[in-house]
Length: 80
Image (tube, rainbow, N blue to C red; front, side):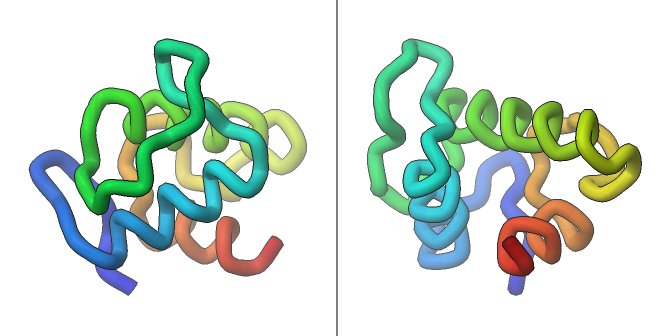
């Protein structure tokens, strides 16, 4: 799957948004993520929150907390 980084939009972003939403991660505003295929600031915030939570459990599992759903983060999201 293609990484979700700055300026990205499409079905790969939608998949990450759906995973985050289904696991209870919200946007910076505290609201559910919009499933809009756009990597906006709300999605970045939710990715960072996911990474922080997972890094506490298993340091290095996501490759750090950077708001980018790269290879390690995506692998972890899909594996859970």
